[in-house]
Each structure stands twice: as structure tokens, then as C-alpha cells.
Image (cartoon, rainbow, N blue to C red; front, side, top):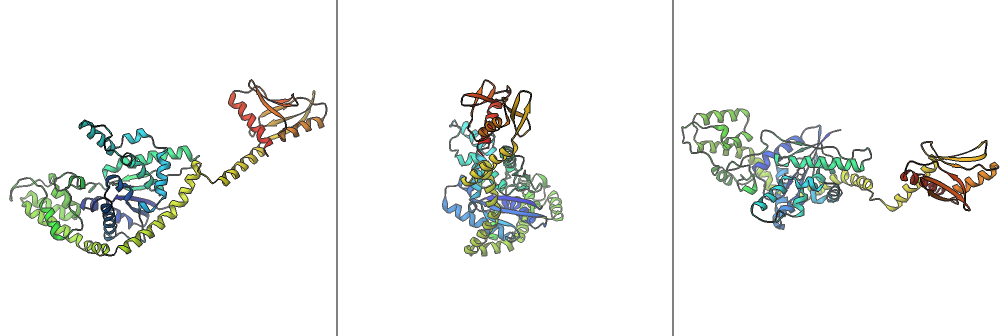
Length: 444
Ligand code: TRP
């Protein structure tokens, strides 16, 4: 079976260079391999957690869809969809919510960060924390487990979430699998080289730090953003330490090994920061201009984008719909008619498994009942002849005998007379089991 690779991108904001280098580009590259099956989706339910501006949500979904396609994602070869087009995902999310330990989610970094901030500000620890934020990792687990992804390319900040998906999936398997592993265990995959790209100020490139370089902006905007990259104050001609410069880190993320080595040496030899920025601009502009053009073409044809994503949803649901049906079945959300049918089957099984034996000993004619394991569970009194014994056995099978528990013994009575009884049983549960089997005999 092919390895399933799955990743989502939260649709808030416009994709920036960090998203591209850290997630989109490696994902698109990986999707070209022949031994993988790729699932890429717009995590627009996740977007709602952080954003209550409908116009921004809508715009961002559109831009991100266009970005992935412009970047070279092939919607024929991959499964490319919007999370919100797959109703099975929130449904699975609820099944998982019911098995996810709250204590596990208390430890999620994103939630803990909010709590820490609140506490530091002297606020209620949960101030401004929605259930969406708190349950974020469960929804992400549903995204991953719905398609039984083997590998999940993510940024470092998401590793914990993938681990939580494993935890939650394992717990579900354990509780409902009955030996079957519904969910495979996903592995987070980090592209070591470019896992997180630094932003203009050297911190991780992120919308929340407002330090991003836009991806498909015009050349002019790209140049302006690069000009704002913070460098140290070494003058032209002074040796610069490339390895401690995030400008170089950015360069390296897009350059060939040879180009990077060249830049490294030139900075050491005193290349001016302004020159270095110009080289970075040329590198990026050269690499991005073609996809930038495709991107703007796609944005101008929203109906085409819509069609592509609808087709992706159909493809995704071909997997999600039957799988969710199995999971619903496993937790007990079953069609009533099927429940009755399974009930019948069980009763038949009991009858088949339970045996009755008529025999004769020194005292007279008797019968006994054996459970599925072949152990005696009931022995009749001795009757004067075989016919009398047979009639009582028939009455037992017809449910006409009174069954009762006396201490740790089960007894069968006919017209107030004891006609059969069990040995002294181990405990209350054993008595209940025997009673149930005997009643099952009657329920044929
Ligand atoms: N939380 C991820 C992020 O912010 C996006 C995401 C949502 C995701 N669901 C996912 C990534 C499932 C991988 C798999 O980057």
C-alpha cells in the first residue's frame, strides 16, 4: 500500500514565504513521488478558531487554494479539498472528543500559552479562550485520522498536535477496535533545512509577528519587504557572519548548495548587506515569477477553483464516508434494524453454543446444561423415568420454569418444586451469567 501523506493549511491571511518554504513547497514536491498518496486541504474550520471576519476567511481560502495550485499541485494526482466540504471530519471530531482526555488537551502548547499570558496579566486563566482553541488538537486529529495518514508534514510547532492525534487514535482503537486497528499511527515529518523560516526581524516568520515576506506579491512589494530585513550594522567591506544572519538563512532556503556556498563566502569577505539583499531579491523573484503569474490567473477564475475543490471533496469523501460508517458502527451508533438483527444472531449463537445432555445414573434419569466452554452449569434432580426428565427439560427450553438465585446457586423450579440447580458458583457475576444463558435458551 502507498504511504499516505496529509497536511492542512489554516486559511487565515495570505500565504507568505514561510508557509511556502516550510509547508507548501515540500508538500508539492513530495506529492510527485510515485509511492505516495497525498491529501492536502484547506483547514478552514481551524481558521474559524482564530478569525471571526467572514470576508477574510473567504478571501484567504481562495488565495490559499490558488497558491497551492499555482505552486504546482496536481489535483488529479492528489486529493485536494476544503476541510469544511467534508462533513465526516467534524463528525469524527466529536467521536474523538468523547475519548480525548481533557488533561491531554490542557497540555497543548497553544492553549498553555494563552493561559500563561492570562495569568501573567492577572486575568482569569481561560479569559478569551474558546472551546475551539481548546479543542484545536482534536479537530486536527480528526483531519489526520479520517484518512489514516502515515506521514504529516508540519512545522515544528505542530509536532505536539500530531503526537496528540496518535494518542487519541490509539485510545479509540483500544476502546472500540476489538482487536482491529481502525487508525494507523501518523508520524510528523519536518523538513530539517527549512522547517521554520525566519521573518524580517529574525523571529519565526509568522503573521502574528507581522514580519512576513509576501509570496505572490508584485516584484516591487517583494523588493520593499526584503529591504526591511533586519541585519547587523556591519559596514560594506566588513566581514559578516553568514550563519548568524537570518538574511542568509532565507537565501539558503531557496538557493542551490552552490549559490549558498558562494553567498556565504562573499559575506565573509565583506559583501555589503544591500548587495546581499539584492541577490536575495533576484533569487526569489526569479523562482516565484512564473507561479506568481499562474496564481493571478487562477484568482481571476473562482468558478474553476470551486470546481477543482468540489471534485476534491468527492474524492475525499469516497474514503471518509464508508470509514465513518464503520466508526459509527463501532461506537454503537447503529441502525435499529441492524441492532435487532445482531441481537438475533447473538441469541442463535448462544443456543448453538449451549448444550443440553440427558443421561441416566444410579439415582435415575437426569439432564444437564453445559455452557459454551463445555462446563456444567445446571444439573437436574433425578426423575423416575426418561419422559419426566424430558418434559422438564422442554419446559426449561420453553422458558416455563422459574429461575432464581439462591445464595451463589442458580435454581430452576417447576410449580414451586426444585427441578434443577447449579453448583455453588464463584461469585455474583457467575450467577448472573448462568441465569442469562438459561434465559437465552428460552429466547430461541
Ligand atoms: N494546525 C496546522 C497549522 O496551523 C494546520 C492543520 C490543520 C493541519 N489540520 C491539520 C496540518 C492536519 C497537518 C494535518 O499549521
